[in-house]
Amino acid sequence: MSKAWIQAKHPEFVRDLFKFFCQGSELLERQMASFDDDGNVEFEVLKDIVGNEMDKGLLWRMKDTAHHVFRNDPHAQLGGRFLDWAIGYIFHETIKLKEDAYQKQNYAPWFHALIKGDTESTGSERDITEQLFQVLNQTEESMQREIARIRFIMAKCRQLLPYYLQRYSDNVLLARYIFSQNELVRSVFKDEYDGLIRAIYGEESERMYVLASQSLRMGGWMDEAAHALEQASQKNPESKIVLQEKKIIDNWAKRIET
Image 1 (cartoon, rainbow, N blue to C red):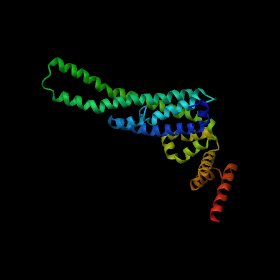
Image 2: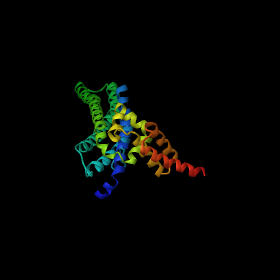
Image 3: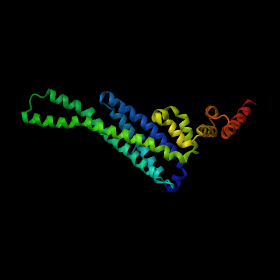
Image 4: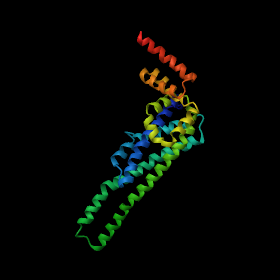
């Protein structure tokens, strides 16, 4: 891909990066919460999230998209460079978690069964196998450290992303995603959600809904556009951009009626 093409598609890449981060955060936190409950994560789920060179998973696509966004940004910021590194770190740390999950899921039960059923080994052999088993037991400690690091880096990404996204307050694709996937975005950012919206749209939070309405309208999703505009009106019914968009939506509705 040429640098010029990547820069031309920059608004889409920014939207995709934010989307992948939200989706990846939700999936990873679900697995990490499972580990908190019973000490287990699902290897197959992590395998799917990571993917491989021929079939890239969500986190792989997130890492690649981060490279496109931050390494081809003509107005690169220090925070963007750290986000590029941090998102790559999440990807690589999840690979380590996946491999540890494989060891624990597949070999721990096998080791237990072998040692429990062993009646023929000499004392020296049994000592060696028990020492090997201790290494496998340390896998859970490794998983704890990997999960702690992933959670820490994800938290820092949630803090850095709003600063980076300040320059994309006019990105209709980003606004449309935040609007259409608002439940997911809120669940990922939690108490930081209001700060995210304020960082991007300042004190005019209705702009997010208006931009979403414009994007949906241009895509032919008029009912969804009207719903977005309704929420913008609830935020600030006297806003000029809200009233302008309302006029367009109302004119469309009149044409449909006639």
